[in-house]
Each structure stands twice: as C-alpha cells, then as structure tokens.
Length: 155
Image (cartoon, rainbow, N blue to C red; front, side, top):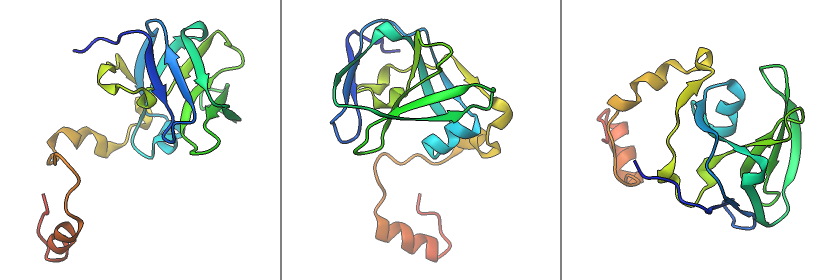
C-alpha cells in the first residue's frame, strides 16, 4: 500500500481551486448514504476526515451550500463555483474538522479507506463489482454499441 506524503496536493476539475493536506488524516471511509450516492453519481462517496488545521486552500474561492444530513445534522458543502467539483464538507457544530472529498487529490492511489459506513443504504448491485469484466481503457464506442445491438457482450 502506497503511503501519503505531505503536503499532498489536490484540485478541482478545472484547476481554479487548489489545496494541500499537510498532516495525516484522522480517517478515510466509503459512505453509502443517499446524499453521498447523489454526490458521486455512484453507490458511495469516499471521505477523508481531517483536522481543519491540516487543510490549506492554496488558490481560488470556494462557494458553499447547506443541506440537512440523514444523521440529523447539517452539512456545509464547499465546491468550485466554476466546475462544480465538491472539495469538502463541514459540520457547523464541529468546525475543527473537515471531510475532504479525496478523489480531488492529485494522487488518489494513496487512499486506503478503513470502513464502509451507511451500509444500510448500500446498493445491492455494488456487492458484485469485483466479478464484473475489467477494461483497461475506454472501450471503442462504435464497437461497443454494435455488440450490444447484436446481443453480445462488448467486454
């Protein structure tokens, strides 16, 4: 397993927001709550809990919006106003922490989630992911569509 080195830099998709993590995270986990599913447009979202002092915004100005959480609290969601990429969340009742969306790190190979949370909302199709065919790069669209039209697996 590759170790994270500090500072660990990250950015939004358009590059206008940049940041760095300067100390070891408290925890990294995969959250399956419905809000995280909507955020990620997948079956879960990875979060990295940090002491606020471990997160430094280097460039850009984030925009925020608030939403209630399934656990009964409030999440303040910070994102790039240009590309919309979510950078981190915070709980106003626990301002000493941020929950970084670590898929925005420049090197995501260092992520090592320690748990799955909100598994009561885990999608049933997620458990079969390891059994699905694996394709190294983007498949050829025309060949994929042709195979599907013919009732064949393109993979």
